[in-house]
Length: 198
Length: 399
Figure 1 (cartoon, chains in turn green, cyan):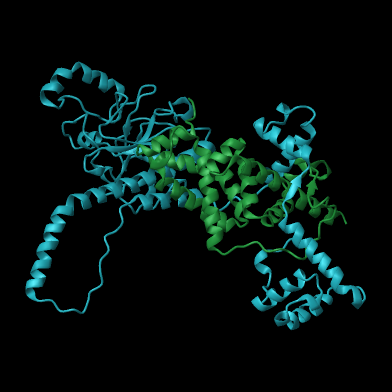
Figure 2: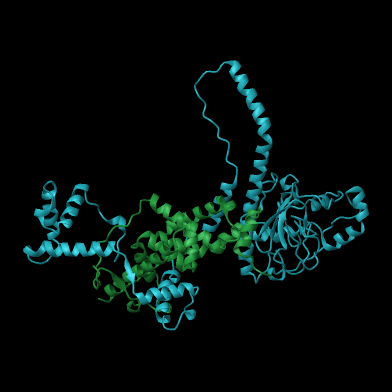
């Protein structure tokens, strides 16, 4: 007995099988909630946006192109909903003057070398709530467009072309934005790690 | 520690302008426009408190520090060129480091480790009923909006106006009535579908707890499954009731909103079954001597449906109509929950040629009596007495 794909389930749902939507909700519950918690920085926000996302899925079901994949569509809608939600809630990023100023700039450009960034091994981090909170802190401190593309890329594992397609932004922008997002996350993570050591 | 951005106080607009001007002027007060100079001087003095060094060099060091910080925040960080290549190669390889060229692999592995830090570390899992609440919201959105009832006004109407309005209302209602009725039916079907979704989840949890078995009231089955409320060790409805009795589902979720006479008040702690046949809303796959295991059934095998009309007629001693639909939704069809958790709406009681109200043995007998059925639309001499059991992979739903 083969498990129906997301696209098959969504097709059934559009044909009137409401139980298929329930299966889709259950199937994507954990990953989508984790993605939204990372993106919004607040479990309660993630909870609200999760519901808004599936409501939007229902309302836009007629527009879904069944030749495309369901999961990227779901996550892109979730990212859009999260952005709207954060805007409504008036969450804005401010410069934290208490953070250490980064040194080591080179000719106006600041290069981040990932081989110099210390990352804990998987067995040391899976159960660490404290570590998770630190990661969240770093993400919260990043500009939303960078945070969004970083999370979409890692949670979705899409090619640049697919990301460009889903987000409807130029391919070059996707590339440079993801580069910048990885660099920003790595730099901030490195700063936190160094602060902890000192 | 990174603080919540909401925690930051904000400068007044005038002070903010003064600070900007001071920074633009590299902390040289004389270069600040006159109108802002006094305020800029106060800002400089305040900031000077933060610096530990002697007074004469405060401003320059602080300005450098602030400018560096602003610069760092406003100009994008760049990945090391080798890391850029590694990231591109990693994405192009479908996020699989082993497919990245060996020269770039260590950097791709660093990128992967960074990503897993984000994606794999535990994040709060949300409240347990989030999926249920989300599903309910979608169902509510799918229901027709209630017709708004306006507030009474204080304006006075003449009798002629009232008569005109009443006439218009009558015409409007007569035109709209089919739509309103259809909307109500649809709302009931959606609410019923929501019940099936809840039961699907409950069946999944039950199966997980009991080695993949479907709910059964007793292990030793025998006798008539048709005797609802008389002998809970034998009635098939008692098997379904097990979900409520063992707290896997509420009695409300086992009650069809489209069936007004359904029993909604049952003390699940004290009884093992619904009190009588007409209190039961749904029909359940008839169990054999042993509990059925879900993995031995087809994914599309029906498990639950709106109540069977065939059993109702059989118990009342009437002739059965094999093609009759469930009475739950006005005889228009029936919802059916399948083994894979999907829900289908059937406008006839046939699922891939299998009549869900009848065991295979009677269906085979009906084929023989096809001529009689074609002539009269009904079959004399066939009924259910409660000892029929489904064949292997045979759909047979009854209370």
